[in-house]
Each structure stands twice: as C-alpha cells, then as structure tokens.
Image (cartoon, rainbow, N blue to C red; front, side, top):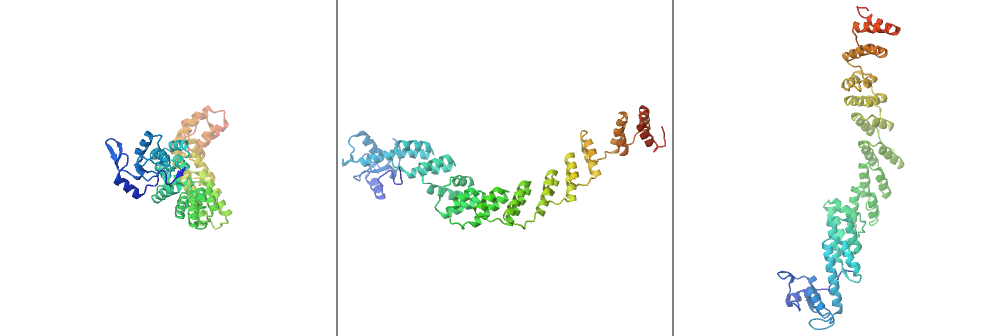
Length: 436
C-alpha cells in the first residue's frame, strides 16, 4: 500500500520544536547515536508521536516495545498505543526499503513489500529509488521502481526536463522510451521537439496523443525533414501518417541524400513518394549529374550505369573521367565497362594502363586496344617467331613490331612447308633492302 504521508503520525514543525526542547522521554536526549561515539542531529523522520501525543525517538520506542511486548502502552502515561506500534512496524519496513532505494535495488525492495502487503509504503522512498535508477540510466530498474509505485510523473518530469534542457540525449531517450504519460503540455512539446530532431516518428505518434492536435505542425515538419536528411524513406512515410506535409524541398533533400549515400534504391523510393503525393515539380537532372560525376571520379561504372538508368545524362566528358580513373587504378575490368557505356577509346590512355599493369594483366589491356611500347612489341615478336606463333606474329607486325632479318629468315626456314608463313615473311622483308 502506497501512502504519501507514511509512515509517521504527521510530525509537525511545532512537534519537532517541542521534541528538541523537551528531549526524548525515554533517553532524555535529542541526538541520534549511530554508535556510542558517533551521533547526528535528529530529523522529523527520527521522531514518532503516539496517540496520546507524546514524542519519542523511533528507535527508543521500538526498543521499549520489544522489551515490553505484552503491555503495548505509552512509557509515560500508560495509555494503549496499538496504532503507534503498528506504525512503528511500518517505519521499520520503510527504513529497510529506504536502504534498497539508496543502493538502487528495486528487487530487494520488491521482496520486502511482497512480504508486508498491508504496510504503508512512503512514496518518497520509492521516488528516491527511481531517481537513483535514472542516474544509473538503468531502464529495467526504472521500470521496476515505477511498478512498485514510484510517482513517475513527478520524478521523470523533472529528470526529463533537465536532460532535454542540458542536451543529455541518452538519458532523455531512456525516459521517453518508457512511454510514460505526462500531463504538462510544456514537457510534451519538449519531447515532441526532441523526437522530431532524432527522427522517431513512432514515439512521436504516442506522445502527440497527449497534446492538442494542430499545435505541433511545425515540429512534424522538422521530423519529416530530419527523415529526408537521414535518407530514411520509410520514416518519411510515418511522418506523413502522423500529419506532416510532404514538400518539394523535402523530396529534393531526400534525393540529394540518396545520391550522397550512393543509394539508387532510395532515390527511386523518394521519386515514388513524390508521385504518390502528386509532387511533380522535382528537377532531378542536376542531382543525378552529381551522382554520375561522383561515380566517375570514384571509378564506379556499375553505379554510373544505375544513375544513367534513372535518367542521368551520359555526358562524354564524365564517361572519359571514369575511364581515366580506371586506368589510374589499373582496373582494366572497369575500363572495359566505361568503354561499353560510351567512353572514348583513347589508345594513348589505354596504353598507359598497359604500361602500369603487371605482366599477368598486360594482355587484358591489349584486348581493350592498348598498344605496348615498341621495344616491348619487338620482344614479343621475337618470342612469337621462336614459338612459331603465326597469329601473334601477324598481329604484332600490324602493330608496328620490328624483327631482325636473321630471326625472320630462321622462321621462314623452319616453316618452309607453311605457305601462309612464307607469304607473311616475304611481305615483311619487302620493306627492307635485305632479302632472304
């Protein structure tokens, strides 16, 4: 049982002054002794008033009752004090719960309360436990203190307001996530502003039910703008369901963020949302151009193809920049895609890719049209002749490779039974003064 006035018989200020003047009627002192040599000043919580209006230390009266279990009378006037004795039990239990509150142990408090269901529990003690749980940012303990009866509207209100005003976002979100009802419209508005800033449309929908509809439209707009800034198409839909108005500016922001994140799927979703809400004046050309150019600069031809599919202009200069980026990074596979998309087949540029490539990938660059330096071609031709590789010899000769007459003569002799070889070598040697 929770009682905001438990556990004492309302010790007033005049009671406190009287006690301090007259002392405890059992120990004849006012101080509280923790040990023989350690004392502290008395507080109202240390005093108990009997039905007959006599004042004692709580501990003194408990000890007296324990020593005189069968009397149940006031030590001074001997009147029956049954209610006081019952109240002393509440005081003892509340003190035990207070220890649990100080150490933030709601399970311990729960155990004590469950064993004493008829005892009046001081709500201030439970509020102390809740306050300590908030300081520890322990959601489970917060919920348990509330379950035990702590006044969340008082404790959480103050802590939440302080957290929001001091930008302690983690603490604020822990409290908000509990979905506690707050009656103060000013705190509700702070919550809604926070949730709009953090893009939390579901929680916004919960708390907006406690405030007059229409009084938070500007906050709703902030929420959908935050969703666009975070490229969150799904959250934007939720904000619209909550009552936010989708604008051209919001769509453009969403599209820009999709491009910045290289998210072509979200780009399509934002366009879908625009069409669904009949927003037609959305110029995507410049936004797509940015995505296309960035894809080229980063050598991402597959991404470039997606932006083209969404409507980006296939600007030849941008395509060529993509090819340059591929050559610079030695990426012949991307270079091939850039060429397929429409980049200019720049032989000099491709040849640079060949020069920079390792031996394993030089042929791949040649397949794209790269021409190796003459000295490399000559070495390849010499090897092709030695290996009797007719097709490669023919290709290298067409590319300008030069072989010595001796090498050509040796090849002709080896392949005397191959007319194609004879014709190829004779045609080559006709260019020179020496003949075979």
